[in-house]
Length: 199
Image (cartoon, rainbow, N blue to C red; front, top):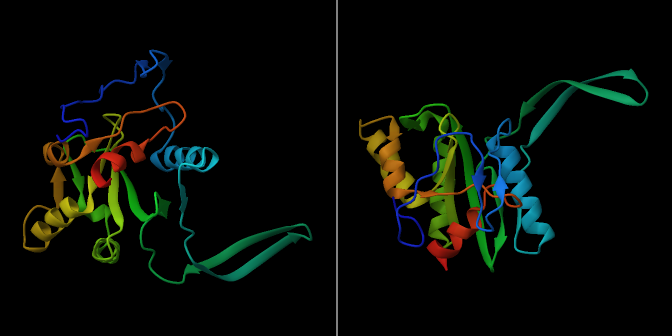
């Protein structure tokens, strides 16, 4: 694995207490999912004026609404207006940043069925315009989270299109990805990796 400081580092595969850089005990994100952790991290980035990155809203066409009371409306039918692109985007250090976030319970691979073709094309276009783009993958059973640059994702996507594996092996993600350690304030501190990769 290419860890930003040049050293190989693996996260613990247990949910036991871990120590952070200040030697304080922090507990793993038991019960939290990746999206909640990233939302919490992005809120911290905005509050500390480090970056402005938000989850993209999914455009929905509301068709039917039920009004059980005047003060409460319940949407009973709606449709996605268009295919969504990636989960998050924003600006960091003067550059556009765009990424997708996915979780898998598999311990051995990340299924490419979790990523859609239109998302891959969108990520390719971000790279063509010199933006920062990647995918964050969490192996929830192993309690490990990785940042995989889009250029590496595209390699495995092309292999899949050429009749190869329909997944990325865990070992391949370790080799080409960057582990994101769990932290207290920025639970998924991906900008630490972005700093070393893109700046």
